[in-house]
Length: 84
Image (cartoon, rainbow, N blue to C red; front, side, top):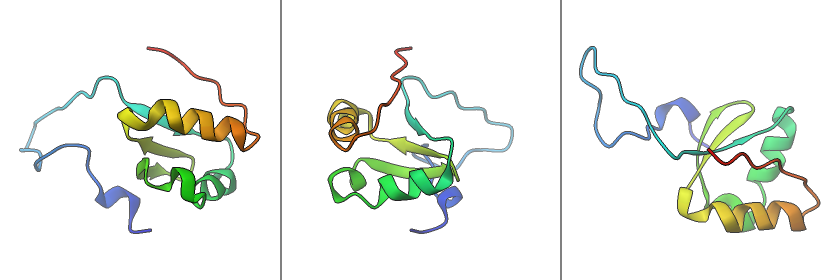
């Protein structure tokens, strides 16, 4: 995987002083970086992960969220889903 911080959810580079707020973002958070790495290796969900934002957080494609959660559950994970 390339440098996770080199990815940007914004379509163009930010201008100096520009601030961007993203709504309706789907994040996968784990308490253990090893668990996130394990999930990322699962071919069933790999394409849904847009970028790794930190050792314990990944950005998931919004349109893939429902299927992503279903696959996590089938794999034995018990994700807590926060609707905001």
